[in-house]
Amino acid sequence: MRQFLAAALAAISLLPALPAFAQQAKTLRRELDPAVVSGDVLKPLWGAKADNLRLFAKRKGQFEVIPFQIDEKDPDGEFLINTNTIPEEVQKEVDLDDVPEADKRKKRIKKFEKNLEDYREDVKDGKLTQQALDDLRRNAYWDEKPGEFDYNDELVFMVRDSGARVARAEWGASQGVEIEISDPVDGGKSWAYLLSFPSNPPPLNPLDYIAYYPKTDTVDGRMGEVDFMDDKPMIAESIVGKMPDGTRIPNVLDRFKLRIRILLTPLFCIPMNFDENNSKAFTIGYKDGPVRVIRRNVFWAVLKGIKVPFFPNIVMYFQFYENGLATEAKFRNPINLKWFVCGGSRFTAGLDLRKSAYGSQVFTRDNRGDSGMILDGRMSEAEKRLSVANQFWIAGFLPNNAALMSRMRYDPELIRRGAILDLYYLDDEASNDGPENEPGQHIIGYTMDIRKFPAGTYHMGFQVYQAFDFKPGQEQELLNIDDKPLEVKAGSPE
Image (cartoon, rainbow, N blue to C red; front, side, top):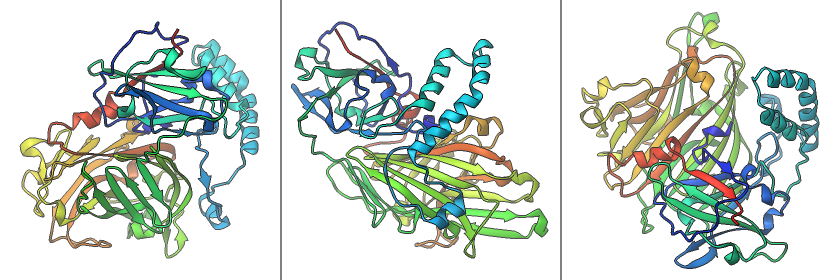
């Protein structure tokens, strides 16, 4: 469910032809947003060779290729990325099949034809639009051809690289699409041009905003570097920021912490404690592009080397950009835990910061100003009375004017059921909770009563953004990436 990705652009519409050309300068001021444009709105280029596409923008009077990438996806919504061979023991532990696309297509067709009459009845009853039925049919029968641009692929670039509007005569290619980007906040606009060349396309822009090093599981972007534990790709243990001039900011992260306390009724509520060392993971595959790094992982829990049967399996996409990351996780919870666990069973996860982060100010939606948090190793009276419910985002401002923001995204069904996380904050230099690299707890994250999490398959995600020269009160600029996403129109102007 791609609505959970931070970089997704909402209100996207395809126009058969944009208005007649009129010279327009770039007025879009937003620079932090990554742009992810679905191939569904770039229909004139379906069937083009992805390697022959180039994205152009007019900047400082020059119509030039800008950094971009095409990320191919199959009709099931899975990215076509470099895939590692999935060991048999991993497939057995997490029920993850490495299914060829031809077999997946057969399953899609079989499922569609089985449900076709129900779909038609839903159309008659107004429960399903004819367009939605046509889309289901297209997805089922689509013959995916790697290397060819199609409706489910994604065009990715940074909006700050877009530019002024350009007349068609300047394109230098007979086939292409004009992409107009608008800010719903102030009406600012900019443009980019995806052009197709039959052969010998212009050179790619050499800029590379982000890089992934699989041997060390490190992501190095223009604005920061994240290092994960080599055998646990969910556990970050270092975040090093980079100032605009390239100066590196000392690591402020001790490690990502995961704490799960289970009291099982069949065991008379004897507590069982799990941490990140009980997690197992496998990197299914990755793609290292100039604008976005995609890494797909599967996670599960073990106890003394044996998979814990009542823990949900998690398949997660990490999408890294120069200024942050967006995740989308698919949770498969096999049982309704409220029937098997006692009160006091909790899930807690968050970032445990180092003392180098002392002096940082932390805010949430309902905890600002005097009721906010200042990291200093001691819990103030205000910090002990924080509002914890429905705090969907957390913003931290470091003394050097750097800012970090994280936010949660929930499956609508989980929100309906009240299965959302509460804010968790503990700033106590005298409290230890290993495993950790530096003594003391300065943890900011989320917690939840495990009994609230229902059986079923759900999608959740979180995002982390980074910015500089930010001060408290400017967090809306980061929130707008998701709350007031940029709008895109694509077409061929006359």
